[in-house]
Image (cartoon, rainbow, N blue to C red; front, side, top):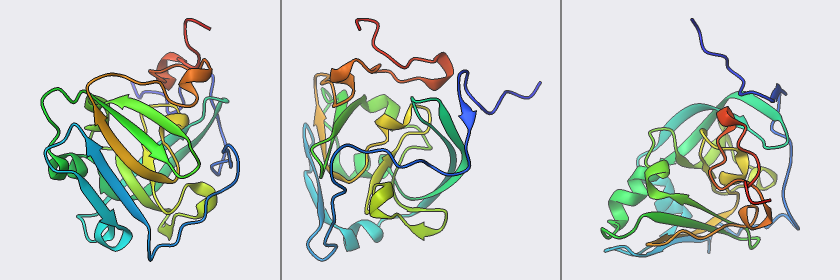
Length: 189
């Protein structure tokens, strides 16, 4: 039996709707850098050019918003999160990752979730450079989670030994964000 394409409570739309808090940041790719630090053996500071030189991957994945809409079969291009992990060499006690963005947004995930084969730092969507309005120049894509875990305008990746709540998780959204379980809101809200 073929599994359903849409998680419970979701409806299909044809294009990712624009959702963000505050102003859309504009990046100057000549000076842009992403930093990777915290509990790692090798802290990183990569320019956009250096990021583009890393091994590229293409991932076709669905995108599920906590608001109840989904866009199926998005073609993302970028760097596997695993590649960053291999380069930074997290210390043994690094169990979580905090992703910080240009607009002040943050989210946090267990490192084990980010090591999935479909998690990437995307700089293209549908074969085109990722527009600022959609999180460009770089966005995290975590297909097995609601989209608020797929942070836009990523600038810092920090490995930690303790879990921290991100922007929406502090505002009663679920920290585990599993669309297949309709895990939209915190049990404590």
